[in-house]
Image (cartoon, rainbow over all chains, first blue to last red; front, side, top):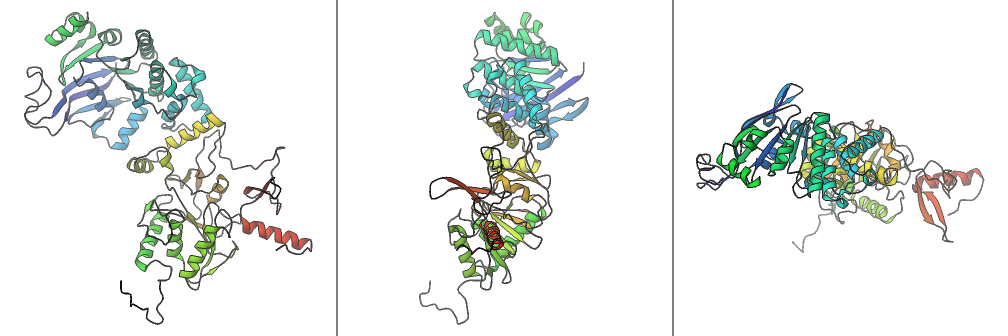
Length: 276
Length: 302
């Protein structure tokens, strides 16, 4: 399988930062706020690899840096240090060395992002179809009929009722908004999909349908995904490999079954025990 | 202020063209830059004019900066030479630019300042059209931050404007923008061509006259140089269309006064309160009406 993303030493520190930040935060200090300068160490020296068609789970409690990680990869935030290499059709691209226009191109045409809050991913002043059209128009498609067909295809793929295609997603239920968001993220055939707490706040039956949908997409389109969640059930169902994060650090990494059945780190042990 | 100050004999109260020479030069430089980068919104230091912002101060500053004593000026508002805004702007320019002649005849004018319309009579190479612009940036509808709008312009990213058109077609089966139709100039920048109706947008395309657009309040000047492509945004399968002015039977309405079927029509009410349609370009209509009267040997109606 081809590698699609390689991240090495990725860090994000909110605040000025000082030479002692890395040494005085983390599990042994039980904080990610540097006591010397007050900066927040949101992510420190994160390494990860992702292959084509693979789902990587990122698990951890609130404030552990999981969302920061995907925001860095989606260029929502600029990193403090580290590199990320994206392999576009086999050609390596250093994500953080690209200029703003190139980053926007990757963001709009190669990556997809689904946020926990649909307000961030969707424009509620447009119709559901319009949201998808916006994404398609960024990729130089300028044919109304084709855009309409493609939007219809994506929305039926994600089980959004087609007769509501021309309504604003403002009037949709939470689960349906999330499905429109997934359809929008899939519009330009992304090779990397970032899912940030997509099922949080939805009821169980809707959660199950969205998780099913994500698995189907992975089987059909072979899209590589990074799934961020604090829900062990989601990790168990979706992810092949998992990273466990705490205080901005990756404390454990391995196959999902291995982590859930035989956790090595004390924190992971507590987490698994609490949930099972 | 010195209350006893008196002008020397022979000295006039205002500089020719009201603005001082430095101000005019600054505007001219902005015009040159705007012509050099077709469609680019060139910022300039918009001066205070003795009238409110929004009454055409942008167009007026352009006109005053490039006018000379030998120019023949035509001022139009809503297609008419005798509407309030046009009359007052014309009087102001006559007052501050001694020697300049004004005309209502499109063919004779060397400089035309307009709002809402491009004259029906085709413009020539020796003419300059100045348009007054209220909102220079077409992206303002979809992006409130000017900083991000500038990046979008630089990258030629107008996908969100097209999304707006998409939504129009979805909801109304056609593009409903009546005026300020976003138009791509020379293959890159998309401009907001002032409040001219959709009907006039094709006249921008490879126009023989230089077209200058000035926004006084927003402090921007941009230009459509002669023989430059101006292509309205549209989809491949939903082409751009101008207003049709069709009646109930699907026929093109003629002008009630001169009978023209190729001009932009205004809807108005006659004495009996019925709807009638009449040319919006008053000079064009008068000229056609005059020759129609002449052709029949009738006496001209005052």
